[in-house]
Amino acid sequence: MILITRLPEPAILAEKKDTWLQSYLKKRAKKPNQRPPSNQYGHREIRETLESMSFHKCFYCERKLIETKGEVDHYIEVTEEPALAFEWKNLYLSCPDCNRRKLSNATIPVSDCLDPCDQSVTHADHLTFDSEYIRPKAGSTKGPKTIQKYKLDRPELNYLRLKHLQRFHELLLKIRDRQIRDGRKTLTNSEKESLVCFKEADYTFSLMFRVYLSGIEV
Image (cartoon, rainbow, N blue to C red; front, side, top):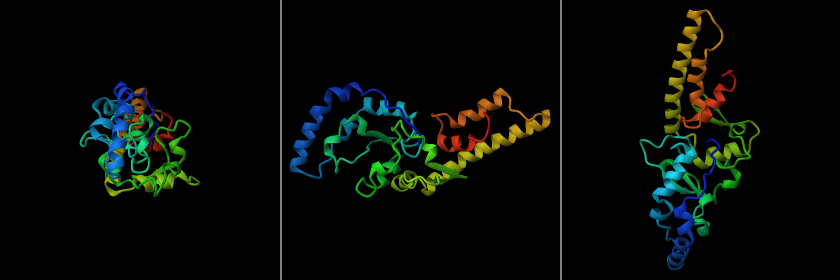
């Protein structure tokens, strides 16, 4: 999970959200379990804006949404706050696993967790990594709750993080071999750039690499 800057509200949402909400609330009054139409809150224009915000990654686990299509997620569930069904600030982008397997707001409130859109928080102050395993930072109260709520320690994420770590370690070995060959201790600009790309916002699991690269001058 990294900081995500929310873009302006899509035009379709600004134009339609009041109409959509009133229609949904009327249906919900008759059928309390009624969900809002996904073709509305998940409209192409809304989805594309969310994808741009997150560099086509899940807001929560940072998995690239290439092999699997992202889902527009309600940060606070409509079962709890139906009035937020079409609120721009309540719409996030999630991989199917994070969306369907996350714990409800009633179980672990979002207020107890890290919010990827909260500009006041540095996520690396709350989350760290031991190899491919995500861990809460010592002293953090939001770190453990975030991992629990979104199940960021699930085995398939550990496996994917490990695969990316292997690529990173392979690059480090190549750089070390070149340094030994050239008899130097410093990194070239090209080598620095090749390492920096791992922690850029558009890279999969970039928070993990920001943690690992924090002790390397690049």
